[in-house]
Length: 389
Image (cartoon, rainbow, N blue to C red; front, side, top):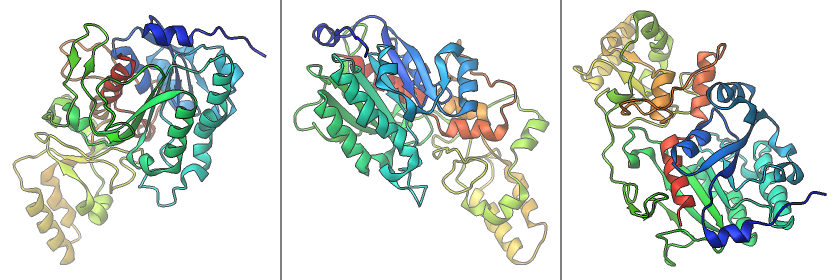
């Protein structure tokens, strides 16, 4: 038995309070943490949970190390979480049960979905029953296909039963000027009588493709910069490393064996381009739908060079792959992807955060962890909207 002070209704009546305490579930390398920090809201992550040991090591190297815990989230209990007295839950559960990239995805029947269902079916209702000890706010992120899952419908109905109002979105970083396409589903929830600004009765229950205009948390003025998906993305060159030496470039070069067999399937982008494909955990290990590669030589026509390569290859030229050398094809570096995911903003005159990798994290692991991450800028804007009144 545990005793929890009932302060939820008082807070709901008065609006946002100082020092909101947050719990991060599936905290990864800290994207949720960083989005909360950058939101400008008086809030802090009190504790973070993830099962991946390497992710926890990276998180600890970049943020307060004593708040992240390697934990099987399906073992967390309401009694344990009640001790944190959290106002906000941030959740980015496994996408593998729902992604269209997984042909055997089983949705709610997938073992990787069980920890999230445990939180929704068991922990949250128990906290609600324990003197209203459930959080005032929730944010959930997942792949866009989550919106069609039974898990999503169950999540929404459960939250409404527990007294939450919800707002749902599918948003893409391209909408916010970031040259990367990464469409994701987001759910925001807050305890009634709190409401979401800018959503009228005709939009209630719909999945929106924009964040409505809303009062900011500081000045009360309307924030409209994210209202509609019409921002002009920056070009990729702004996110690229400019100091790569020959050794680094050699490591990033697409292997000949991959180009010979799969080269024509790559999504190839130029430094001057304003779009790149979604980067997944399989980047550099997979070709299709795993992320774009860079063509460093912008003076050449990609199609013409590949046509010459394919013709030479079909004629039995064993060195046909050398025709592609002139394009300067390479993978994005982990640092470049960290920028595209907006862990760091290349346009900040004085960077406010310097992301680091602890010793021993392999290149493959870095790509995997980034591919599992959230876009910090998109989540930052959603947190501001969630807390705004």
